[in-house]
Length: 214
Image (cartoon, rainbow, N blue to C red; front, top):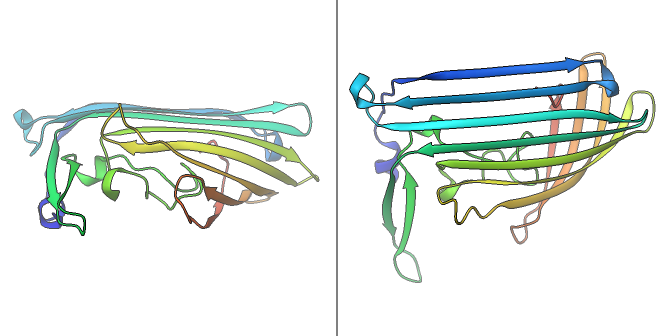
């Protein structure tokens, strides 16, 4: 399985377009705005790619003030890939297990989890079989309260996953709390999050510097 998935080097030639549209206003806690990213491309053997596949992706982040001391942060991502799946049979104590793995090159496969995705899970740990998937759905809502001039508290809820079957996305949930310090180098965010869909999953701690609109 490992040799089949990672043993070969894949040469990809893709044609498409990429959009990056940030609109950010203000500073410190009063930073508001939105940031959209999108891309669409296709790779084809006709122009030299080793594999044929297409991909579309869209993300949006919004910061909105609710009075002087409250702020809501919303984030969403969606991705779709038209790529073949390869079937593998693995031995296990309960008999052979069949898994499906995307034939997308690894750098193009979708993964979720981490401080900019579904908090409560490790970075890029959410996907089919842990190796990346064809599709992606992520959503996040965060409420922030300004406690002092440069300090605030936050509570958040995230949900999402990377997956191969739209009929069975198995979205994972995470929730937690955080502290924000608006320093001269930008926003410093410390989050503690619990993954709600893996039994015995420990709390994850994240330290992030910079606006969540990045």
